[in-house]
Length: 369
Ligand SMILES: Cc1cc2nc3c(=O)[nH]c(=O)nc-3n(C[C@H](O)[C@H](O)[C@H](O)COP(=O)(O)O)c2cc1C
Image 1 (cartoon, rainbow, N blue to C red):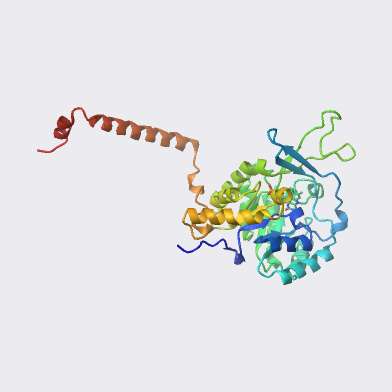
Image 2: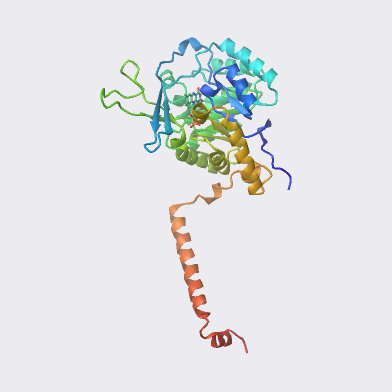
């Protein structure tokens, strides 16, 4: 058998491997993005940018951790970080420079704007002129920006999602992914609205609204900024089952109609494989790379390659989406279990026929004259 390939083509874009750094600190400027490509990542979604960075003011501390009681490992992570506070013009120069230096790696610009058609169309036109490969629309940041009716305030409304994606698609010449918020009852509604408006792909999930904890001595919620806080976005291993469920729902609603980029709590090749089985063509990793470093790409690539070899798959397309058909209703589970019990009972009574004690009589009873 020939060696399996890790590469994948999504919305016309060729990725050397399906591992993409998710928008956030791992893609915070051109320098770190270059380092990520050097380390072997197939793609990077840069930190989200907007036209006017002067409106963005970050605070510190802005992260909080949930640790395992057993060994202190970080299993959950909260952030109240906003989008990039670096000047827009600086980003335009850096996108151009990164693309020139790394033509074989996919650079995806994450953009966010206010509810204003001109603003969205201006950022799309100017950023695509830098040569980036695709856009990811941040319709999903759960904290800070919704106060300005941006981020998840948009993604929670299928109508606004459709309108904004429509504005973007009027001027975009490159693929557009819409990034969804999990802070909603039915994630398929904005996802389907985005696809109806022409989105090529859906990225999910952004972070889950959370409160990481309260300091028992001061009774101040964390992370504490001058004694106060806001609910933040939860990520890392602990969110993976919730993310998988959202991706499953998007996959069942949209697989084949739009590409999916699976995100949420992925740290190992085994984690990533599960998102691919749920329909993802690429997977994004943010907190895992912050906690464990860019070097994890080496074990992600080798782990995926070992899996493909063991399963005799040529590429991820051989198993992509394969787990989706095994979700059903609870009533159907009950029916399947009853049918299985009936089969087993039938098997038992047939086995009784062949107990071995009266084999001659049993043979005769089953033989035609
Ligand atoms: C510190 C931090 C900053 C983030 N900033 C952004 C951002 O600017 N834009 C965005 O779309 N998502 C942002 N995210 C969300 C991640 O891209 C990702 O959707 C989420 O963290 C779940 O994936 P993970 O468990 O691999 O981190 C951020 C996450 C973290 C932890």
